[in-house]
Figure: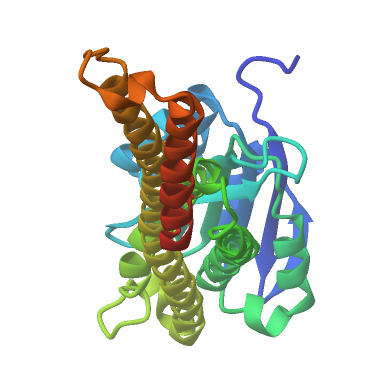
Length: 333
């Protein structure tokens, strides 16, 4: 177990002019923040309220943003606090096939961005952002733009993780659609469609709010911290827009597939009812003839006829065969 009050510090690094200066301890952050042309990038995972309070003091974070980070379970959003931003994004990862593949793991990343700092707090998710830091450090000419480019890189990496999930949801829908007209599979298809719809809505809740929020970052009145990289945030917006379109298409197709499957259930039930009605009609004729000859009136000539019994059986059999042939031609049997 970790010591209480000790931050789960993944990385704390100072950069100047796009070049890595040094790895820092928490107590050194404020000193580097005071240096001109320098910014600090800190990454935490599953931070406690005490750890967030420590970061609040180091970076002078807004109380409302820190409070949202403490409580978690926030909707995706971008909030402007003067010269700083608070960004919340959902971290989604599809469970492997064969595990609980009907579920999408969900976490959050809270990103505090100021003129000379970036603080990311990852919660309830095992996927790290090490690759994002490596990418940024390989591109010093872009990292020179400061915290705005780091925010873009974190958002871009998060959004890119949505794309395989959207592709997999589309593939699962295609597989279900191939089984739609398989006899006897309608009810099972509906169960899978509702499970798929739940995951699609989970992805939509991560994407749709961010689509609108990201549009503010590259506009003419966007936050000052994003001023040097508006074209990059436009790229993130384009990715979100494409994923959102995929999600809407899948949602629409799921609705159509559910209606088709419900129709297939109704058709199958109708066919069963036709079969029952046909057999009931055949037995009704036989029952009617038996009932007529079973009245035993003395004046019935068939009672004294030597061949009356086999003749009655023949009439009943012939009537049933004629009805069976009629229903068979009509497709009821």
